[in-house]
Image 1 (tube, chains in turn orange, green):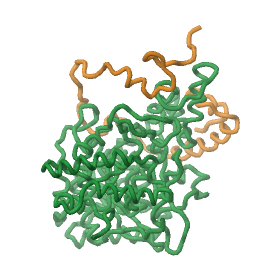
Image 2 (cartoon, chains in turn orange, brown):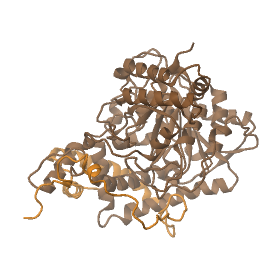
Image 3 (cartoon, chains in turn purple, blue):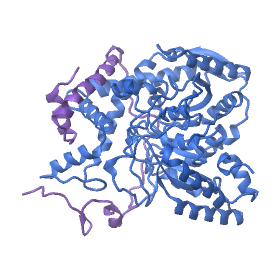
Image 4 (tube, chains in turn purple, green):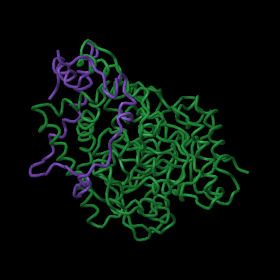
Length: 95
Length: 493
């Protein structure tokens, strides 16, 4: 499989990364190089093989259903580029 | 008296306990070394001298009070990927501009609880994506090693290039690092240092900037095998804050140093003899086999038939997980924001300006392989191949193999801005060909120096172990170290 310029632009849009025409053109070649490299996986027989979902076989730990953290609004917004009274400020989303 | 910065952690520990030196003296020696060397090496991207001296002072007080921890007064460098409270934590990316978390990662907290001193944050490839440290927003790190008779700057490997360079140049006693596809072991091999990636689940990932969550593992880079064992003991823990942290007590790894490997079965996988591999790497491998045989180990040929598929499967799984993990960088909650005409425009401009080329490339690949219609063909197939890679190792271990010996890298350190590598991302990816299988299977792997090549540059051997049998790796690596000796670069900086 390979990608064309339109696909690269669509994927960039999905990934929320602005790309210029030049960048998108360059990425077509790079991404196709990588897709060509991973293409060899298609020769592996994976019939009846379970996909790996857990690196170490273990039961997932569950924490107690109790409040263990919170009341840290100041800490949470401390690194934000733009805030107002513990709210994150963003451009208007709803007209 | 020997130069303080030339002491290993074990040696410094003895001198500190015997009150021959103080933690403040030791810390001051490292700060002076960083001041004079960092402009040339660029291993540190943030130095924290005030914090270091304050921590060292507290260490001296605890030593005086007889309350010294396992790493009391030992000055360490911390990879920029670890969250350190109030201190520069940016994964060497522009998109985390100005980020200083209000929390401390579990691994670094474990180190401070044991009395270690933080010297600063270390350079790395952006978001740990790279094998040369050249993708860092803060510029390339120079390898303290140079080829004989050459002034050419070499890469220290990556992504933990700052960690490896700082340890090799004696700009810290030891360093934290992380390994997703080889990011501890490859730079260790390129700098003549020792690096271990423990079993997945041994070190908590909590508070460490995520790259590919099913592959990421923290570990130390150190000057010798004993120091690596000392550091891992403190870094590893059982952590309720990481659901993949495994409930197993942390052994005293140092106790395995010096133990016999007589009767141990060492597997030699034929698939690691790759086309175009330099003869020197093959010779190093044979030398390693001979050393282990001399020490009483039994050498057996094994087969790991899916080895060649590990790297292509990795370049689906890792970018897929990365594209998901890096979705959080949107200019809203932390880091860089570039304003736009609406919120989507702001996201797109922020991410375009904040991520470097390699990171964008991987997010794009990850987004593509996870997108509608391609998931089964790429991601699901790669995860199935991963099961097969893991099964290869399980079969070898089931047949009685205790550890596996391979070369750590297919070459010694290469030049900064190597044109051949820059023009083809896949060529750079091939650096991880011997290390990436270990991440895919979640196993522990250690890189230990085995010798130098004809250019006088260090080469490493890798040992791969069973899950949670890091002790086997430490004792076997120590046998190699005893035979090979230790390697220190000639100072040019």
